[in-house]
Amino acid sequence: MRSMFRIILTASAVSLVPCLTAPCSAQGFGLGLRLSAMHDDYSVASDGQRFTGGQLRARISPRTAIEASLDLRTRETEDLTARVRDIPIQASLLFYPLRTSFAPYILGGAGWYSHRIQTLAGDEVLESESSTRFGWHAGFGAELKLGKHAGIHADYRYTFLHFGSDAIESDTIAGAIASAHDQDSGIMSRFLPSSDGSMWTAGFTIYF
Image (cartoon, rainbow, N blue to C red; front, side, top):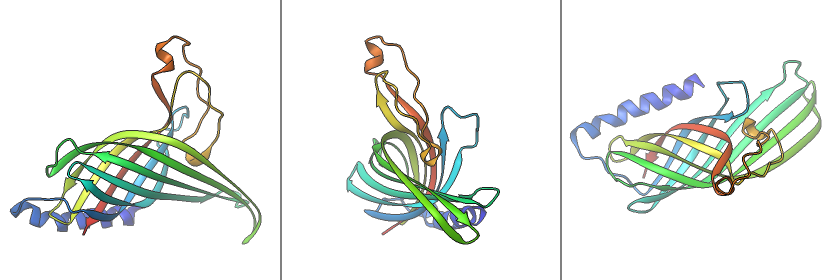
């Protein structure tokens, strides 16, 4: 985790030099690394579950871009009898109201959240169970251009969006799924969105 932070900070510092002497501009296609933290909104844990991953961003118009991202978190239980792997994959549409060196954006899209538990006996896998959950997400963020070929971004996403007051079945995929609470049965509650989780992301992108 620390090594990835060093890579992002070093690359950001190097890329910032040309931005100080020349106008920054976005390119059409980019690949990058990112860190993310997913939170269960009903959990007492405040730090969430941390992931490492990457993203691909491609501009499709002067004010819109698409993003495909994949994150990964693997851990073993304290007694070393099970290994848990979570892989969130998201596809998002980003809208930039302003195309400047510091560009805020709003986003929305869909996600597929894979959760696998392997039962272990030493190095041998005795049993494996997998599940996948689909969910919508939406959020906001900003990207800072570092010259013509790099940028850093951070955003906040509401995950597993739903409308109305119906309860959703509980699950524990990627630490971002929990039991939804029944809301007021008033007319407005049938149209207001709510979410079962949240997600922070921060990343560094190289544009070509």
